[in-house]
Length: 161
Length: 185
Image (tube, rainbow over all chains, first blue to last red; front, side):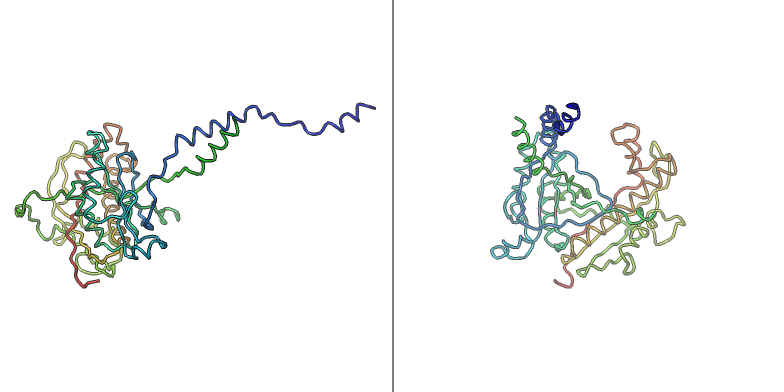
């Protein structure tokens, strides 16, 4: 009779968690390796346009970013609502671009300097006037490789096929 | 131990951004060394494909107003000019390793925008022009080698040469003029 009694009180056996730390560590290392820390705090709101002919930007270390857009809403009281340029962490003017490019260039290896790319993250509602001015400054600073940052648009024609 | 690992794991999970930067790559023309006008590089009018965008984001191509959707086909026709029409681009002979001697277009796209044009529209037009050239290259590679241009691997030496040759046949010839402020803001 005791045979049956015993079976009733036993309950669920606990799961062996000995391998849990291993799994957690594996995930941890994965995320540690893939993480790219965000370097800048965006002060302008940027909604980049969509495009179909986009290419991936390789080698993050060769890329410098220029943001153009309206200042964030909580900054608009001090900075106004006209589109502004942001370099690194601060608002900048056109004249600052050349210094920015020079300092970015100095941080790179000599071999990489030729491959330096400037990624323009520009809000899609910005007027072209400021964009053209920035492009002219980049030409003057001879940072000629640029990339108009844009999101990959899924081709509707392909979806319908 | 596992607790600390968990803590770190959650931190990195939150901090990770998985977005990959994508965009349309362009090469800006270098600043002219001095004020010499490059008169010898004068291009005949029929070889220039005029694309204008005004401050209201209207698109003017060659002879009239068009929709962005029509631009790609028009650009392709301009470069290909299959019937050797008078108003489309002239051709010249070009010899490349992979495609042999063939007639290629002398055409150049001239893109000009107003300072009041919106950036979104500008990118849409740039994208269509890029799409047109990419499709031409793609069709060429498909016709001759049965390969898609976009699937060619630049790390493979042969395919890299094929890419350079396709680029020679259909260069991304977009010239951007300084914008004019017409019609104000």
